[in-house]
Amino acid sequence: MKKIMLIVTGLFFSTLVFAQDIAADKVPSVVVNTFKQVFPNASKVEWELKGDLYNADFNLGATDCEAWLDKKGSIVKQKKDIPAKNLPVVVSKSISDNFKGYRIDDVDWFEVDKQVFYRVELKKQKLEKDVVLDKNGKIVNKIL
Image 1 (tube, rainbow, N blue to C red):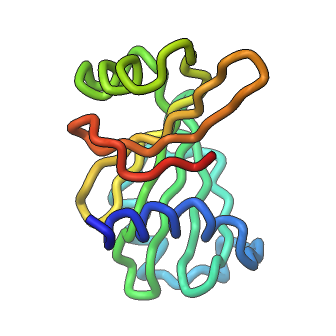
Image 2: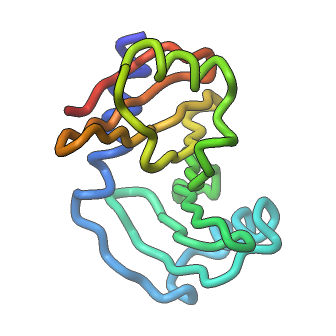
């Protein structure tokens, strides 16, 4: 479980570390090919190099998404914005049980190492919390 918490925490903070915009023609073909196979309907694709990973920021319809691929073209993690109503019931219940009086402001769905997580931004008057839960509603990390 500690490994998962470290991965998820790293996921959030890795976006803050030395990102460099790159043109699509500078992204290795194996990375682009994998991306196009997995996300054939992606639009408005923008690429960044973040450390050793290629980050694609794109839209699927009206949904904002991101995917991180390694140099071999493997998808390491992915994220998409989702409406709060699309949270699994068990995750919504965990939030209401553990964060009374807070409302859900924003939700991101993540997949890291084939495991699903939800980053939920909660608000209560002037207080804000970012909470990470697994697909079973277990809180795996709180970012205060």
